[in-house]
Amino acid sequence: MPEAASVQAARATIGDSEFDRDTAVTPREPGVYGIDLSAGWTISNAVNGGYLLAVLGRALADALPHSDPFTISAHYLTASRPGPAVVRTDVVRTGRTLSTGQASLFQYDDEGREVERIRVLASYGDLDALPDDVRTTAKPPVIPPMDQCFGPQDAPAPDPGSSAIAERLMLKLDPATLGWALGSPSGRGEMRSWFGLADGRDADALSLLLAVDALPPTAFELGLSGWVPTVELTVHVRCRPAPGPLRVSITTRNLAGGFLEEDAEVWDSADRLVAQSRQLARARLS
Image 1: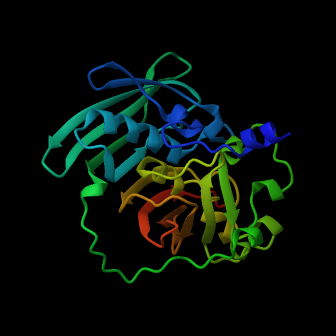
Image 2: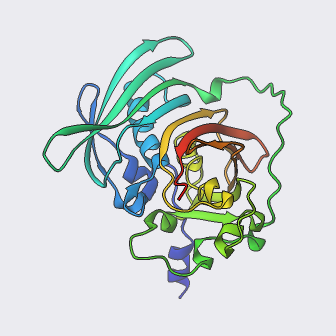
């Protein structure tokens, strides 16, 4: 019994976790990487956009002289599938404090044609070299303690394969943003949650790219249902997160013409704003 308990208590570390293994890219030639996109990061068989962004982010970290994403913008062109993929990178510019590159992920369709799934443009630097000076009016989101929040494990069992990503995340959602789950959406377009990886791995710059796109869509609290595919997503990484769970707050202020924006803030255990993002997504109105 003690031995089993110690195994269960073991936490994954940065560089040695399922997230690291599933985002690892294999160099094939200069600027070209192979990867097998894992089905473990899917929702209804669609590969999560934050996971995809982390995959391309890892490839660019290898291709560029700087290792930390400062800003990364992605356009999602076609839906990615679990399975083999190729990432091609291109170094646009290198400088002393910032380097810029672009990357695209490709897969083959059912007819054997190569299809571009996602294209990104990003600037990388060294987060540890940033000055400590912070001047902000932003405040951390107010979320109840974890034991007063609810996660996927508190909901009825989903259909097999419908939310594989939920098994890999530690999500504890603010009850005030869970009206949709009870059939009474608030109409406010807000989602707040404690966030981490289920295996206990602490956050780093790359996992922040996942964190901004891992919560249920704000469209649910607007009274909509179904898939909300990302059209474009831009993430700003502001500093390296401290160990411990993150707090993620996402808001939507405008849904028009079948499109909505989601503005996300990610705060670490030291009450620092470590990442911000905005994405444009399509919403199913009927």
